[in-house]
Amino acid sequence: MVDPEEPSGPPRAPTGTRDVLWPESARWEEMVARFARRAQRAGYGLVLTPVLEEARLFRRGVGEASEMVTKEMYELVDRGGRHLALRPEGTAPVVRAFVQHHPPTPWKAWYLTPAFRYERPQAGRYRQHHQLGVEAMGSDDPDLDVEVITVAAGFYDELGLRRVELSVNSMGCGADRPAYLSALRAFLEEHAGELCDEHRERYRQNPLRVLDCKRPQCRAVTEAAPRMVDHLDEACAAHFARVCAGLSALGIGYRLEPRLVRGLDYYTRTTFEFGSAALESAQNAVGGGGRYDGLAEAIGGPPAPGIGFGIGIERLLLACDAEGCFAAPAAAPDVFVVDLTGGEVARDLAEELRRAGLAAERAFDGRSLKAQLRLADRSGARAAVVVGPAELAAGQVQVKDLRTGRGDRQVARSAVVVELVADLGTAPGALS
Ligand code: HAM
Image (cartoon, rainbow, N blue to C red; front, side, top):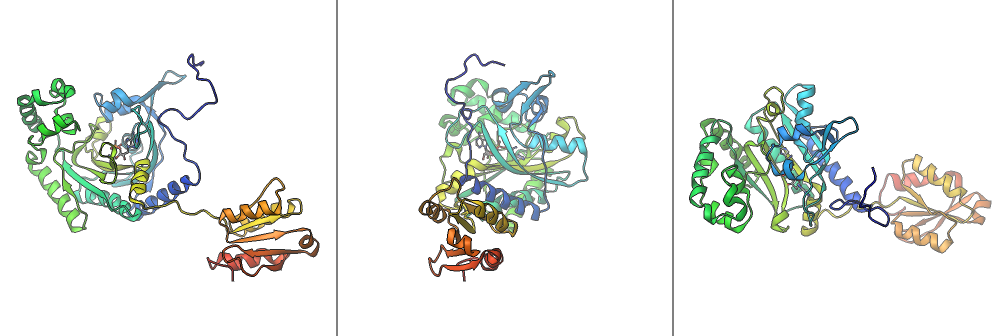
């Protein structure tokens, strides 16, 4: 296909998407590794599903009328005429996989996924972002809600974030929500004139959206709106009480936020969001989730309750920057090989060191001694191995301790790998 409006110049990453280069990517690696460890400790296994799904999955799952589907979803027709979508979120695909493969329950999965939404890009809001998440299928035990929320809360804590606040609410269920919606609609009817332009007309179709509206006019009206938590039936009220009690028992601070409805249609009962007080309020949600006990059925599967959350990695990193925590881990090599004899020694010795388990780096392109030593210093390596013509002739290498700068020593070329492994591999820190 030829793009009639093809821009000039070399191609760039599409608007609203970002490249993550090293060393920033080292933070991503570390973040994902920590999340994986935490999820696995709680019994969640990794699930991988395709980035492309049938578009109808999200229509049925996230909601035909939701903004995510009507305005933000990237849809395409493939060469075989299939209607596909790039996933705008991670939950519906995981539930689809659960319905398709019916694994034994409870089925607990964690994931790392890109998500695509055609939104207006700004700081903390991208057209491709990435989520770390969990989904737990097949149980409606409120203690599972507590477990899921605790995995996320513990993760923020482990990263060193101290200004992340948890809001919780209950959305009720199919049994008690209709009566609540009538009460909410009647209240909004009385105050229609005070609502923002968008909701003055549209509150009747989906009154819950008004609760989610961040504009000051709607905020002022909904302050006094009827609350779902006051309209829960007995089972939903007992469920929510048990969730709140569980959070308190585990020392997880939370605030009841009766207007928290979240933007996806599948939520039932417990919903929650983690907001960072260190970020601009418009994009301060660093994670959110809830129960979706009707989702498996909505996409055509057997009934199966479920709960999970998604954490936006980019936003989480912005929150870490704002709080000055979770710096990029240093990725320095153990050894830098400086070769002034044509490069063969660097080629062979670097590989020998790597095979022995050390991180080894070297210079290319026949650089001068000065340039190679500068690179070695800049790399943060703990030791340098220098080979000049004299060392080569004598079957020796020179080992330099770059951390202390002390005690260069000559070592036999044949013994240097074993010696460096003994020095660096077992006892991190300066060379002995
Ligand atoms: P969500 O609230 O739409 O929920 O997204 C989860 C998180 O992804 C947000 O809290 C935010 O950190 C991040 N995020 C969302 N949109 C963007 C964006 N445009 N740019 C950057 N970050 C963004 C879900 O997606 C649900 N699937 C969560 C869930 C899992 N519920 C149950 N299970």
